Length: 354
Image (tube, rainbow, N blue to C red; front, side, top):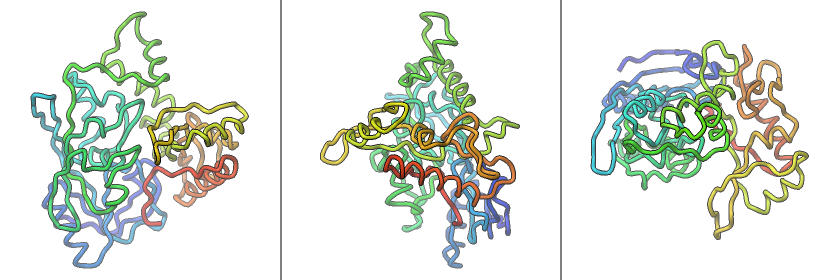
């Protein structure tokens, strides 16, 4: 284990903000994870696990503990009767896995093309976009249990998946360190096309009556993401972000109708979210719509922090912003939405060192 002191964290995040890690180590093997955890426990030092840094806001004061960056490699295929299993190290780029699945014509993650970050973060956040979530294709997660100090393997049913949630970021937060994920994909499967944006993008790019392939869908998703500043492109200032900064709220049907009555632009778009407590119907609505109705447009700036010129849901570092600047803007937006609609938006990026 190679231990580094006072490692800058800003370059390791897509936001490009944040202070120093007091100690820092990269783990390319499970044994190094065990060693890093033991080192932090023996010295009473806090430990934070870093993946691709794409869903992260680091404090300007940095992190006064050990940052463990997961760099475990490996992508292996296991052909089984009920599909093709991709066994992938937690440090592998997520988009690299998507590209490999497309090359083998395996369906299940084509709508998740262009999402930054690493494989290890996908079960933690239950990453999803354009009608797909990784929970639908995850077969097994291998992780290090920091409490029992042992490696465990969890089936999908044991992971507690729901919208943008899992046991890894809720009830068992900071307990598990993901080292490998097994995804079960469908060879020669049909692409998932559920979102109107995606349907329109495909209609514009394919000949009339043409049947989209998995590659077509992934390419369309990337075009949409780029148009919204949600694709990492060198030189694009709208990319200095953590993607969607707020989660889309899931609310009751009654609250949806109340919001629809108060919105100057009529009812917001809505998506089914399944039953809630006592089987009450729940509705998912776009946080971007709420933000715009609360008076914040694309390109809004608050000092060096701002809203993307391409998508209201992405907060950006306009150049020279601090984490404090980003957080101040997020709180201002959240307060305005709460005052207008009675909904407190939930921040999606993990906050470290605050």
